Length: 285
Length: 232
Picture: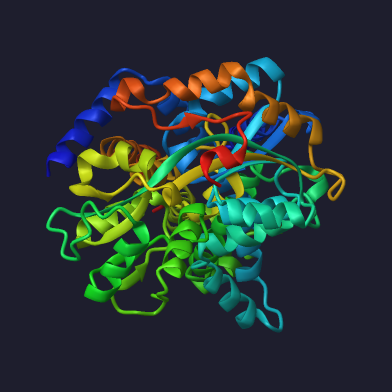
């Protein structure tokens, strides 16, 4: 290789480097909005539908970080996210009490279901009470798969175990995956175990699973989503204006109508029910 | 097995229809991992050559550090880079977290020790007299290093391939520092994780196949360069 050839090759690499660095968008800081949310809102495809509309209307660029509700609130507490869309009411109340959140608004709900193999070894099919169903799973020692990841679903599940007066932690039939809802459902399907799931994720995975809905329709199994603006007074870098704009957007009439219709085409039934402006009491909270 | 054949069909469909989103995800994968490999080649090959050619106290210790770094777990790198880039972390003012730049940083950290470790081994593996011979023929130090690198070209290109292979396939760091943001930081590996989590196994398989093709393409290119004019 001659020297000039070598030099031209290096300058080519250098040009490529400059091009790629320049191509990385710099973006004004205030135009970025970090949304920490749950895997269920992303996996259902709802956010993919709503965010482009919001970005176009408001001019903000939304960075969606899909994690469990617990982790989303941790990010909010540390000022690493601007706005949260979460479903873990008890933990949310603590979050608000600690003044980490500015404004918390009801957005929508769907429900949790107990799913399991069609053979139903614990005999929970059709039991109206989730607490009773959990108790039966515990007494028969049928395999139960827990998310075990501090997500909203995991928090709900722990609440039901508590109500059932059982502490399954460490027991042989109780296994924690530490994974998202979709993966936990797949594990439950493979191992023929029971699990608590949100209806949206279950519906979107149903065709590959072979798990059946065994318990549903109890008020305790409600899955409620709130949008929370992270308190900018605590963390000056938090984008308060953007968070408010996103909150306003989620409870706006137009978006609520989109939510009401979302999923009908694909699953024959909506995945979420819009709740903006309702009193939490009306949902039995 | 039906899922697999469905996945292969889906991959062909996505490839043939030039699906816009898949195309941009593939390009971003190539861009992020390519740039990281490039940076790691500059740092790793430069540093590795210097380490191999000089003798200094603590050299063995340093080389074992580099060799350990060749197995650096991507999630650990991702975790540390995230902590550094947090808004309220030491480099928070740069607003880099959840950007492609953050992914390049993490992947460069992963690839550099790989490139450096193989470079050290390759240069040390050259006949020990070669260096003296070249110098005896009146070459400058810079010319000598260039000749040595040429001589060690086969293993050095293997170093580039190993570095690229290490970063194009990693998912732990990318998902942590990039956040898998649609149309912005979503790359082939993180998209595959997400799609299989969603239960879209056919799409996940399709993305996996595209990733394999991409790896093959890049490595084929590098292999052609490697084998073109074999020294001696």
